[in-house]
Image: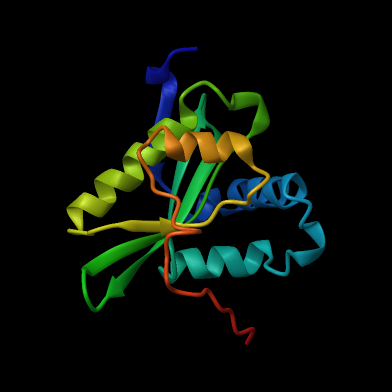
Length: 153
């Protein structure tokens, strides 16, 4: 399979079911199935209402990967992106799917004049860490003077 057979496109409402199936695979991969409170209906509604951006990777018409991100704003730097996820179905990893999705995010960020992209990765997920390091991403975990907080709503 060559990289030309990978088609990247913006997710449509018709893609929501397949994407959400992959989201459930991600939750299982990260041992977070009990934390998945989102559901396919809400995901589709939020996709339609542009609450987030989603690109899908298709091979032979089948969605094998996705990326979800939102545009954000920094008072000092202007437009930025928060990358929620890049996920590729296990059987399709190592074929360039993640790289194609990454390139699409970068292209979208450049089109919107974004200055940076922020994201998180689990410390145990060494393949993903290597993926980001190979793309000249900087691990801010020990460099930042900021602390990260969360407020559940």
